[in-house]
Image (cartoon, rainbow, N blue to C red; front, top):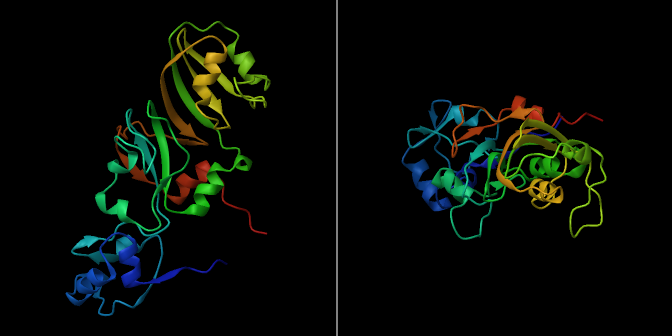
Length: 249
């Protein structure tokens, strides 16, 4: 059985962006932090970090932000970048301002390029991030593709063969599954994540991607009611749809 982590209250709230340790102390002294309805009087009280902590702790009259171990899905809109450093609109600007001061920081799990929309996962849990992006996880990702020219008819066979080589690379792609939607649109399901892979795959068969949208990872589907720019916290059940729970040894 894994040990449930604990943190001093002042460190917990400071790491979650509520202010410096001194500012958190002032919150405690002012009686503005409660746990299970009781005012916390000592900033050095150790807090058990459980998933329901945001339901049990109140700070400044509002529920605590999601505790460490946060994971969310974001409907990434076009025109924003999955980066902490690049210029221009960033996906992190779509999250609450305080969340951008968290330590450890929230990071994207993989990336979608600036001109790709759809399902993007984010977390502050480094172990979860690496489990999902690991090639050994073999997690499928489905994209809806809009094309500049009509499909030729042999693309699905070429993509499924596992022999397609992208320009500038010396290793063939793993098999990918394409399903035709219309003459100029299709879905493509991959288990890899090479640089601009979907765009380069269609370029290799003489076509050009004009719009690209990811709507699924594993068995987790982007909800139709989650609008572009909106996010939703992931539950354990959601995570199990992406990455089955690790088996006990």
